[in-house]
Every structure is written in structure tokens, then in C-alpha cells.
Length: 158
Image (cartoon, rainbow, N blue to C red; front, top):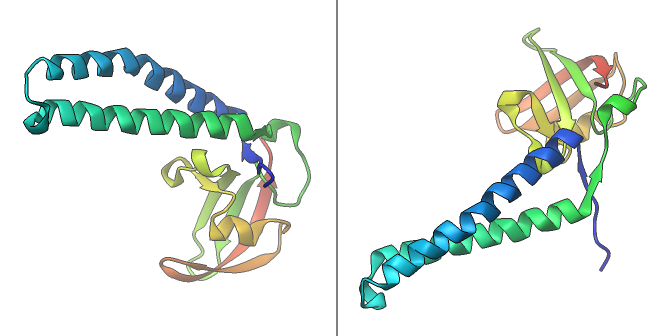
């Protein structure tokens, strides 16, 4: 089975590395919590012990997930890209054809997408509909709130 690359911006990779470092720094603290809880006696009814073990499991799973994603990261710097076609890293200004509202989104990796920060995942329905299009093109996309029709106003790489 081939290992699939994981597209990310440099900013997204930096965020994942920061989270990974923070989680690795938590390991000794969690081990101490487990040790203290273990000293309280009977482990079968020790809520502190079970909570600390559960926390340890979640942290270790996230560390493994982050290490996997970082090992497969295909870093694409939008600042080095140009052109009129929408692709990964593009910041796309859109005009909602029904409401005349204008919105702008940058297309980024799944792990770094945050709609409130103006970024959407490359795998999101809207991003998939926009890929390969250029200013002046219209796209219709089924979103959780219903069908939306957008016109691409501009495509920038920054």
C-alpha cells in the first residue's frame, strides 16, 4: 500500500510541530500523575488513576497521529506559486451569486483548516469544486446549508 502524501502549508507544518513538542513535554507530567494516583491504593476504583491513564492514551495517540502526518507532509508554500487557476494554497475571493456577499478562503491541508480563520480543507466540497477553475467561472456546490452558487472573483497566492 502506497503512503499518501499529506499537503500542507509551511504555517500548517509549524503548527503541527509546535503541538507535537507541547504534547511530548506533557509526557513526564502525565507519568507523575499516574504515579501519584497509583500510590492511592486500589487501582480498580481509583478514578484519578483511570483518568490519568486515559489522558496518557489520548496524548500518545495524538503524538503518533502528528508524527505520521508530519512524516508524510508535502510542504507547498503558496508564496512560491502563481497563476489564475485555483489549486492548493490559493486564496480565492468568491461572490455568492444569490446574496451578492463576497467571501475569501485559502485552500489548505485538512489538518490546518479553520473556517473562522478563512481557511478551508483541500478535501472540503467547496475546495474540490473550485480546483482548476479561474476568475469568472461559476461553481455550484452542495454544502450543509444547501446548494450554493459562487462566482470566482480572484485567485491569489501569498
